[in-house]
Length: 240
Length: 337
Image (cartoon, rainbow over all chains, first blue to last red; front, side):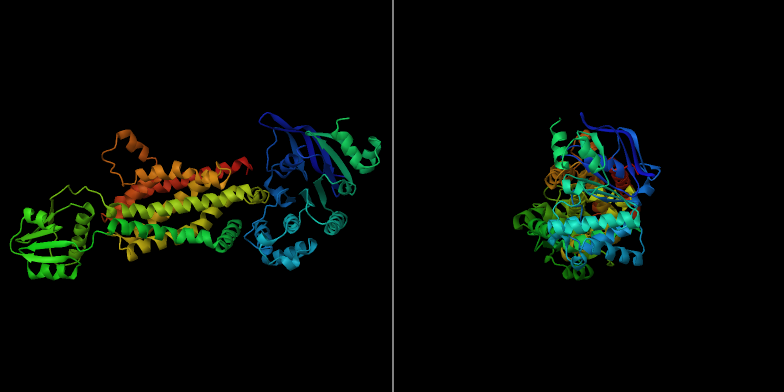
């Protein structure tokens, strides 16, 4: 199967600290790929470089056959940042409208996509309320809806389910799996919640800017002789 | 299209932020009014003595607000004794004005009122002025009130636009914005036009208030005043958003005020530039408000035409272009295109 994201010998330093050591990863199309690792391991940095918001020091990234950075790729990537980047003075609908316009959607398209995205994150009834009045979980959901708004081929979600209750988390994961299966989307997700990692098709474990383990959840557990991913996480974190 | 989306968003945001709107529109009027009364409180009841007058001149003067006395003979000594602000002597069609000038603002007010009275009348305006105290170069509110108008436009637009973009940086929305296909120049353009719209409204309100309500002297065209102030607003807008990239919090943005705003005030004409050392005057030349004040003072106080202030306007335009270009470049640290 063709790779949606192809990362080769990528490295990045801030000041003197090496955040990403030369790192190569292939992310297959139409899979859910989980990027796991403790805080500060370089997940967000890696993601920002894939989206094209940050320039790597060395190495290259190819997304859908195009080398990053490429302006045309931005419409193909739905990005959800770790912090909720929302305009709190505006309503949920105004936020969605704004981003939809940035992707150049027509009025009728916008209406369909906004209704669809709001439905998925179950915000349809709260769309006309100011984001200022949203709870933490609602803001997270709105951020996810914005990532879905332009119907991108690739979804890159930086810790999307933080602060979302278990019930909604279930429904969001179901939707992610449906997007993968029915709409052929590639999803790259970062998390440090292990039950989420279990649901990924493939996971890469990141520690101090290096991929230390790669494979399906089953493979990784077997590799580390662990009963659960939690155990793997502890083993890797402890530097075994 | 994307720029339009950004403009619409800015309007939606600002309409909900009533306090910022109040600061933008009402605060300049409040401060301007206060300064007007502080500087202008003593220029009421200007005493004018006229000698050798004719009915035509009398008719004109009686329509003005002078405390008017007609005499056959008068002298400087009597002026000092009776604390009369001005003595207008008319001889063979020539008018000679003697001003007490104990308080420069009263002398200025007298001159301006006289000029306004005779403006548009048949009376030939060939008036020579003579001062009992000081000279014609003495400063007063009327000289620097035009600059105040420009200053308020600059100050409030600078602060509000700077903090708005800063908020966009710190909240992560700018980064999120740059993950969409919007181009850097579209962001800068959206900000300029979105906030420019509010700056325009502010400029119109401030100028109309200053001229119509506070009656600040306006000899030249109000359109030139508006044009100058619009340029000032664009310079302030682009400088504010540019400097916001060097601030990491609202507090740090406010720290730019003593660095960027206050020094500019020194070169706006409140303090006479003639007496300054050359190197100091040169410093003034890199400050946008120097040109803004020069143009505004020229139009409002001296009645300059567009040709007389073309150079000032051009420099302001250049400032705006440079700051806008730097804005677009500074976004490069987020994204290459």
